[in-house]
Image 1: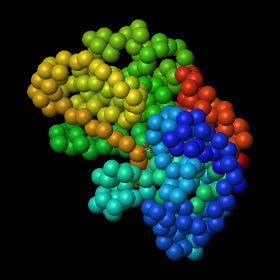
Image 2: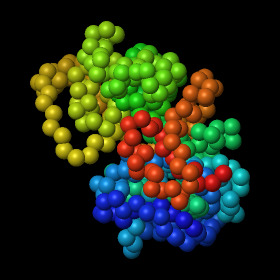
Image 3: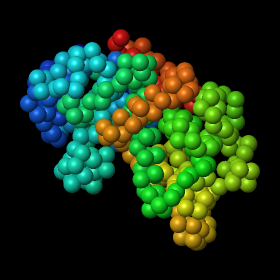
Image 4: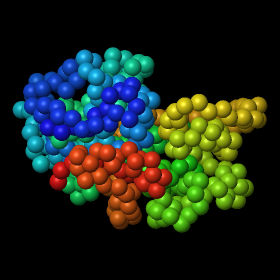
Length: 373
Ligand code: BGC
Ligand code: ZN
């Protein structure tokens, strides 16, 4: 069967290759974990989303092949349909729609209790990213433990399950951490960045009843500003209105969700957070970037204001479930809006060469490969 892969360490190596079609009895990542007897699920990939992570893997900034090989099948944002299940799988049947989690457990205590998303080991195993093959193929097999059901009515948004899990986790982490304050009731949120993560976070924060300002560089109107506004948020183009100006107009935010991929913005956000507020970092910023900040002022304000910085990466099955639920509630509350995030459909694995240029395009939100169905 066909698969889209890279040669980790070699820039611009994305290619199409032939790999064996997996059987239900195969172990997809025996170097990490084994599927217990009868618990395997075989899935036909329908759509696989791509994002900056795939672009950076193709640029050879990170990503590793599974041991014993030189290639890595990419694709960590899966959506597919179950075709076959082992005899000990009771929660899924052929025909069900699923998304599969990305991380597989290492050996830390966190991994042992099902929290591989917060492993304390330096090495992490992620399908399509690090040391495990991804989903950009025709069929894949994994443990039922890592498959999360997507309701049939939500299948048009199924490819957003993984990005939604990342947002749901990050917001949940902030709220969990803020229990330190006993009565935290955030009113105003700034979402920094209006890519797919920024927009899905905008929706989830609106669903929690917050007043949301979604900030990105380019002044609207354009698709991103229209989607943010359709969720009931206020879009702010920072070329016109800086974050500091916005604070003068509307006040400081209790919660900042950072999703820009810009290291300076991560730190500038520290200058505007309200007392008792939480700043959540979700983006990864590659390369090297020097920023000049008034560190003493930030230190003083952060200590006197009891402020919190939370970082969040990846999502386990609970976060996938929360993300899928938010997509469902969002679809009910803002019908048709989330689907507008699906901007670029690549028509099949054979068109793999279209993927990377689309990821460079500043206009695109969700780029995904339509594999079948
Ligand atoms: C993925 C996460 C992953 C992270 C780090 C993101 O693009 O969506 O699942 O944990 O990259 O590899
Ligand atoms: Zn991703």
